[in-house]
Image (tube, rainbow, N blue to C red; front, side, top):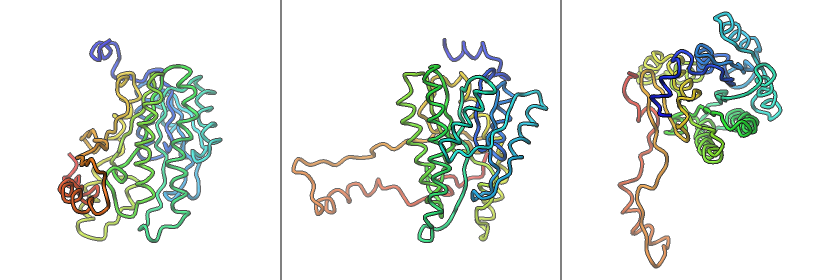
Length: 315
């Protein structure tokens, strides 16, 4: 069946009809927007959120239920879950919530995250571990539990939230950026491992003014201007790509990295060799300094960051 033929058979407003989707970190912001749009397109949604503060402290279980109430009041189907993605047991409970309430699991949106932004030479072990446990290990935990069910039913879609902080770089986010770029490698390997079972795995680097970006410094005129630009980009702008990747319309899309930025959608490149030098004698450190570096230097990538790659206002 061609994409056009498949499109003709699917009601655009019900692209995810009958799909059971887990969305982690769905109590606010981008996760909430994704959960609501999935439900409006026919999906049954598990809204997972433990309601912690931006740095991972505290907790408010009412946030997830509030999103669920809104979905159900609008005629959708949703249930809440307040287990932490940071533990494997928590991940088992999250997926079990989908199975107990809806009988299956079709889609996992790994969106949960926290921030512990600090310049690297001042970062503590706790700053590192807390972010890694939620974002990278949490993504593994939920994905691994769901993978068994995806394999058994020969279908499924993983949608992982990455970030330009990892893809491109940012100040004070070595923990966050490492997790987000690690998620890209994780997603690609899942796509390779599970392609035989018709399981897809893709990444989205979202852009929105939310709690996660509200902590961005606004001390200089340039920072203030950029914050004003970001405030125009609402969480809802990221949800359509997630709904597409959850639907059968994306059945041939896997191993990719997309970015959503207001009305822009970007397909990101993935690391590939830029240029190669070789010698029959093998290389010595001195020969690398004398021959390789001068030859390759014009291909070196600059020490840039997200703001340098996206200097224009969101379209």
